[in-house]
Each structure stands twice: as C-alpha cells, then as structure tokens.
Figure 1 (cartoon, rainbow, N blue to C red):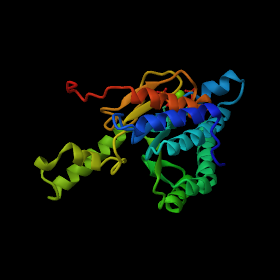
Figure 2 (figure 1 turned 90 degrees about the vertical axis):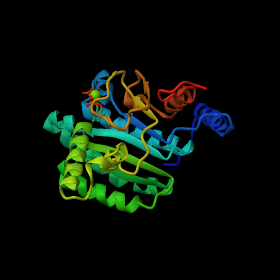
Figure 3 (figure 1 turned 180 degrees about the vertical axis):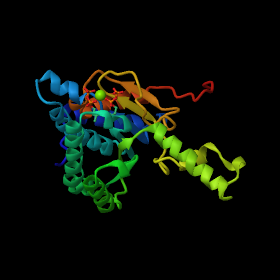
Figure 4 (figure 1 turned 180 degrees about the horizontal axis):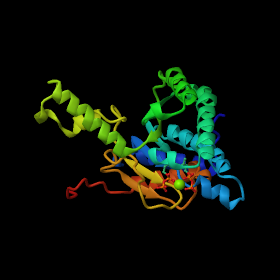
Length: 259
Ligand code: IPE
Ligand code: IPE
Ligand code: MG
C-alpha cells in the first residue's frame, strides 16, 4: 500500500526535513531501534484475544517503516520476538510465528518498491523451519534494497548474542587467528548479530515500560531513549515523528563537555 501521509503527518515530515537540512542542525538518526510492546494489553482492552493485538501491530510496523523511509533513516530494527518470549503459551507462540511468516511473505512487493532489504537478527535456527524458510526467501528477494535495512530481532536476546560473540572470539584466539591484545570493542561488535550496522541512535519503547528487556544491550550504549505510554498497535507515523523531533532537540555529549 503506498504511503499517503495524513495532513498532520505531512506537516511533521516537512518540519523535520527542514530541520535536518539546515546546516546548523543535528543529523537525523541513522538507526532507530524499537521495542514494540503492548499488543496484548491493546487486545485485552477490547476484549479480544492477545493475537488480535499482534495482528493489529502489523499495521504499525508498516506505518513506521514508511515514516522511516520518508525521513531517509537507513536502519530500522524492530524487536519482534525475544529469547524470553518462548516462555509464552504454545498457542500464542504458534500464532505469532504464523503471523510472522505471513508478514515476511506478503510484504515483499512493498519492500521492493521502497528499496527496503530485510534482515533477521537472533538465534534464527530456533525458529520453526517454515519461518526460517520464508525469512531466507524474503532476505534474498530484498537483498538489493539500498535505501533502508529493516531488521527483525527474532528469537533475539542480547545476553545470548554477547555470549556467542565471546565464544566465537575465544575460538579464534585458540586457533591462533586472533591475539588477545587485538580484541577491541570493534572486534566485539563484529561478532554480534548486528555486525556491519551502526549502533542505534534512538531506542523507542511503547506501552510505558521503563526497561530494555534484553534488547541490544551492547549496541545501545549511547542511544537516546524515548518511552511512550501508547501501546504498539496505536503507535503510528505521527507518534514516530514526535519521537524524532524530540531526538533532534537532545544534546548528545558522549561524556564530554559541550564546547
Ligand atoms: C509485544 O506485545 C509483542 C511481543 C512481545 C511479541 P506483548 O505481547 O508483550 O503485549 P503486552 O506487553 O502483553 O501488552
Ligand atoms: C519485549 O517485550 C520483547 C518484544 C517486544 C519482542 P516483552 O513484553 O516480552 O518484555 P517484558 O516481558 O515486558 O520485559
Ligand atoms: Mg509485553
């Protein structure tokens, strides 16, 4: 579906574009990471099964991806399923996996049209085979997309990711391919699922929880954080633009003193 911004969204796009184009402005974020939370509560408030909240959340994914493209943000990373989410009832996990497969299959034309390439981050071999198959199919179909990388964190947990990186680095040292003295933060970054990606500039969490839930712990070291009470299925382009506007007004000091 082509993106037809509402008048309110259009006015945000114009203001944000003008702000980031001015020479004294801060650059727009290169990477936005989002913890899409609150689907279950959204459904509960309506007396619907939780899965209907997840289904409604897909419309928000579309809206935010389109908003990112409008602002030329090259990396969008969405937390879709955590290593801890395997603890949920089997029926919810199964329904989520099916929704995920359908999304990966049905959005290919939209991704191709918008120059979006898809990438999965996480312990992907734990996903059901039919999801792995579609993920790989969609990744290949969209790999030439040059304008934006949409990453889905799937069966993703930061501690799992960092532990694997430690093991991979230890193997290289043991095999004589790397010296201990050569282990730098860049080497660690290169062994994470996110290898090759810039660190997130902005982390958004919906549904008002003040926690990071094992998401991109290494990568968000200096990310700006934006938390909104709004539940994920209600979070749309205009709310995203608000977050970007707030981000642009932040003073990122990285521990230094402003000169
Ligand atoms: C986020 O919504 C989606 C996933 C974790 C898959 P939740 O399902 O966590 O919704 P709440 O937090 O229970 O409302
Ligand atoms: C984080 O949300 C994981 C995803 C959004 C996929 P959760 O709902 O699983 O996190 P907690 O339980 O609130 O920490
Ligand atoms: Mg939740």
